Image 1 (cartoon, each protein chain N blue to C red):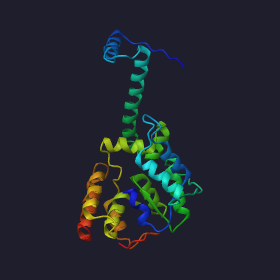
Image 2: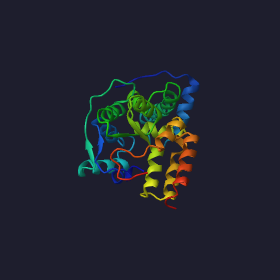
Image 3: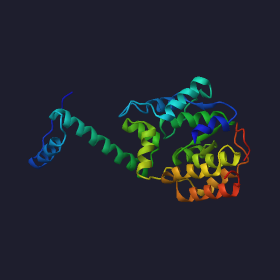
Image 4: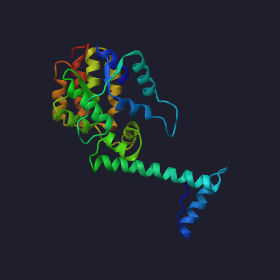
Length: 150
Length: 107
């Protein structure tokens, strides 16, 4: 799903150094081979599709990357924060930050026509193990209601 | 650094039986390998516990255990822990947002 993000947003994606460090850390052990998402992120940083930007980090009970990303979104009201877990999502909402969860992003990609409905369904299949059934059901319903793609 | 531990006879027999099934490994090498496997298994259990019981975020857990956040997410996925158990009402409200900042598409 993340491969579509630079297409969906007309501005560069923003990421703090702490998030970059989290991504760079992947693959150090047990396998030193960089993962696909890691290589993709490196490419995006190099070609400018991802801009590294550091905020003043709020004092909250989250990891360094999550806190930095939330701090960045908080300082820039015209920025939306993509999150993949409930804790960061709820904290973002509490702070008045626009937070997008991965299932929402899938629905929006399908609605935009960038992703076919069948592909969106497959993305939701992957998310099923880590997402509450109610959210998945609502997302699937949204894909049907959207009526775009096949 | 060298550490020594004491095993009772039953524990020793189990360890030796396991090492015998690891051809080519020295006893010290096999013990180190088994120890690291045990640490990884313990970390996987801890990740689930810290997330579900202590409600820690994945980033916080990663820092606490000295692993990557994506590795934490992968363990939670493997154990089918719902990391996106956000309120469905909030999800519905999110879907009804007319647009997202900076997006090229309109919903």
